[in-house]
Every structure is written in C-alpha cells, then in structure tokens.
Length: 322
Length: 179
Image (tube, rainbow over the protein chains, first blue to last red):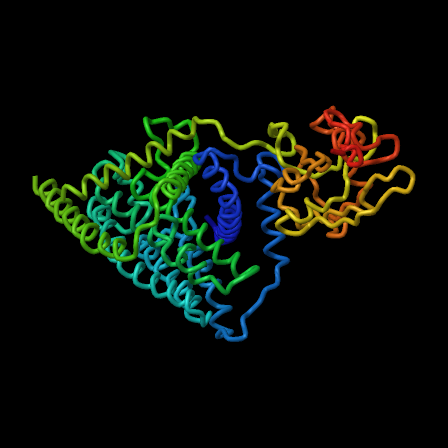
C-alpha cells in the first residue's frame, strides 16, 4: 500500500475501532440480557441500537468535572492514556492479507507493550483522584496487571516458538497447517485468562469492583473522561479478541478451505465470536476475591505457562531434529 | 490438585448452563405495551366511594387519618344542615406520601375509602399528587355494592329515627321501666 492509502486505512481502522467499541457497549448489554433472561436496552431504534447514540449524548453533555482535591493534569491525562495505548495496539493487527497498518517484525512485542502501557492509565487515574477508593483500585490494578502480564507474555512464547517469528503476518501464515488453538491449548487457556485480567473485564474487574470500591479507579471521573475509560476498556476487549483470533484461531485464514468468503469476513466473524465468549464469561463467572486472584495467577497460571513452554520447546526441538 | 480440577469443571459447567440460556425466553413484561394482571384486591390508588343511594359514604370519623402510617390523609368533619349526616368538609390525600398500605381501608367503618388496582399516577409536579375530595370521589359503591352505613347504624338522621335501621331494636323507653 502507498503512504496515502496507509493513512486512509489507519484512520478507518481507528474510526472502526472506536465505533466498534461504542456498539460493543450496546451489544454487550443486549447479550447479557439474553443470557440473563431479560431484554437489555430495546427502546431506542431497532433492537435498541439507538442506545449507543443516547449514551453518547448523555456522556458528552454531562458536567466534565475535575475535583478540586485532584491532581489536575494527571487526572486529565489518565483517561487518554488507555485509549491511545489501545488504539496503537490496533496498528499491528492483521485484518486480512495485506490489510495491516504496519507489519512490524516485533508485532507481538509491540502489542504486549501497548497493553502494558494501559496500566498507567488506571494507576494514574487512581492516584490522581486523591480518593481512597480510587487509590485502592489503582493499587489493585497495578498488582493485578503486573502479575498477569508476566505469563500473558510467556503464554504467547509457545506460539512464537512454533511459528518462529514475532511478526503477526508470519504467525497467521504459519497456521495454514493447523490453528494454534489445538497445539497451544494451554497457551490459549492462560492467555484468555490473562487477557481478561489485563483488560480488567468482569471476572477480574477488581480495580473497579463496584461492590467493594464503588467504582475503583474511576470513582471521581464523570462525563467524557469517564467515557474515555469505558472506550479504552471496550477497545481493549476488541483488541484482545483480535489478538486471540490472530494468534490462536488462524487470523484471516478460512477454516475447511472455505476461501470463497473474503478473509476480512473470516477475521471479523472469529473476532466477533471471541467477543461473545468474553461477554459470556462476564455473564457466568463471579468476581474472585483479591487473594484468590493473586494466588491463581502466581500458583496456577504461571506454572501452567512454564510447563507449556517447556513442552512446546521440547516438541519443537524434537521436530526440528527429526 | 483435586480441588483445582473440580473448581475448573464447576466453572465450565456454569459457563455452559449460562450459554444454554440463549434459548430460554425473557421474563420481562414489556410494561407500557403489555400490562401486567392486577388482582381485584390489588392495593393501588385510593378512592372514596358512594353508598347505593348515591350519597357519599365517608362520615369523617378520622380513623383512616389516624391509621395512616405516613400521615398522608387529612380531612375536616362537618355536619350537613338538612339531614344531620356527617361528611368531610375537605378530604385530602397526598399521594406523594402514600405507601399504598391499605390500613385506611381496613380502618374505615363505612367502607368509604377503598384501594383500587391502578398505580399509574405519574405527575410532573409534586402538587399534582395531592388529591382533593372531588378527585377521589367515584360514582359508585366500589367493592361493597349493598352497604349503606346509615341504614345499619344507630345514628339518627333526617328520615330515620333511632331504632329504624336494619336489625336494630327500638330504643328502650326509660320512662316505661316502672316497677
């Protein structure tokens, strides 16, 4: 692609991601309603899709208030950080063959780096609010993200070993023989859990934990700044789903050689199903206690990842030697 | 290790059973389009009823106001000149306070005050929630079709002397109780 088309594509990806995140708020509520035997928002427009616009208008017109006791500039900076980091993460997502903003040879590391930057948003938001609940939420998120990041990265190393590359395109291409969700089942399992913890979505939303911390790190936020946090969370959901599709479910590759359907449709469909699965997890599983979360991370997930890594390495070496 | 596997299986079963809820019907009643069934004895809006002759039943005894837990009923007793019946000069219920408990209905000796199955009383102004007697009064006997307090009670009104009510004995003539 020429520079001009890359810029056009980048802008359309950004708008698509933000729009997708906005629609995801409505879609999630509808899906939660379906699984909880109710309807969810169904009043405005067909199937209640107008709820997105209504929420947007409400958030945009709300008083955008900075508490007088808060650290003003950090307070304003925090919500933007998560959105920027998550949007940057979309740069390496391969939506189809050649449909990628940039094919970095360290694409996977770039993605991990960008999701790690999101922790600053939560941490600074909690710290700058100068509020006990917000600080506790920020502390929790720092501990949670740091510990889950360890094996979030490690769980992907099996994929990297098998494909022999950090580049997203190479990883997708190397799955022509079989998706990594079968050979890297443990990696997928750990990555899904770590990804939920990383995007602090519901089973692991301890940084916000409504029942304990009112709203955690965004207790003091309102209006558009609050919307930015929400946008970041849903962008994270979409980004993580894109990554799971790319790394474990063959990205844009068509299953059963159904290649007459375009690659981008396959990619979108797989991502959509992964998003649905995340919403299902939110619907089904209660939030663990904080010490349970930590012991799950360090005592179970990390050993599983290491075992997976050792076995994958041994098998990869054995195949290479044979 | 066994606990771990068991809890994992339990989580997966939870996810599966929630997924099966894709095929169950929503419990929601789509309220404004689809009204729920309200039993005849549902405790909703309060009305004042009239006896079968078309006269108001309320005798302004104040028992409802005394029974009312949030004190939302207020009334003033008066006596009608022409027939000697008691009646409320004003009868006011503040529905922004009313909790629809039905204690006024239970306290009422004349079945005048009754709760009906209607709860749709939204207003934009709080003052509109205060109902006066003309708003409360309905043109019928409500749940009790035949009851007429003055026809069974011993109170003397015009056209009905003491002892002329239903099932009422003539008053004892104290002057005839001579030895």
